[in-house]
Length: 395
Image (cartoon, helix red, strand yellow):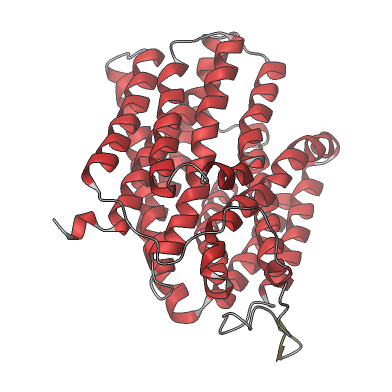
């Protein structure tokens, strides 16, 4: 029992709760919005913009930590996200869906900000990539359960949207309550700074985080759209791709974590971005549906390598900076979410290939940044330039 009262299992339980409820919300959203709330492209565009605003404002988490312990805040964030999901089916109107989406998104984005902060504080540096890999695998397993439950529930039992949303949100609330009751309050070895700041010596981490957010938008917004628009993938085909992605991630994410522990963040990120260059260029020219699907799966798999950015930061950072920097970095990651979908959507109308070639250019920039990660990152050895260690800034 002592083993299951560890911080690692607390974090995995919350990861499962968040992933399960969000996966149901995400999988049902488009159909629910059209069938129950009579959404058109205008309303769904507004909803998606509203959904990203809490991610952009994730830096405000540091102010809430002035009055709430970080562990309790994480539990409350998962519960808030679950509440938003549970209420979704009960408010099938334009403004009702806007309200529940924002409610869900506030909890969702605060939780993932705190997940990173708590992982980097509680888990020792030598194990953090492995633990983050296990969290990613747990999230994928929870998503698989969510997708399978939706398919069985709708195919064989004709379950209503309201019941599925209520069940998913209710389970998240229940798991958050279990996390509160079952696990003790874990201590922090280093008190966290409760104010906003950006440090000059973290510039490479900020840059990698920003580029990672940009790459994420190309995948989320345009790769899936390519499957539907160019190759005519049905909703069932897309669901199968989701399932395949999560099966592969559940199997490989822990192994990727162990790879990072053994070979380091620099090699892992180099492989990720080199692979992305190939994937994005291939997206621009692919003409065969099965090859496009293979690229989509490979693209998603490369996401798991991004945990190297977090473990790199853990090694170079002042331990007291974890909570505040997690909020700042989440905001940096979401800057691209505000700009890229709209801007690149206009470019898409002219040439989808240009969108993916721009994604390849972003991957090139990320690759150059990844090569600046030292082989042995630590305080005082944050950036590797021209074969020598960069001089540490005290800022």
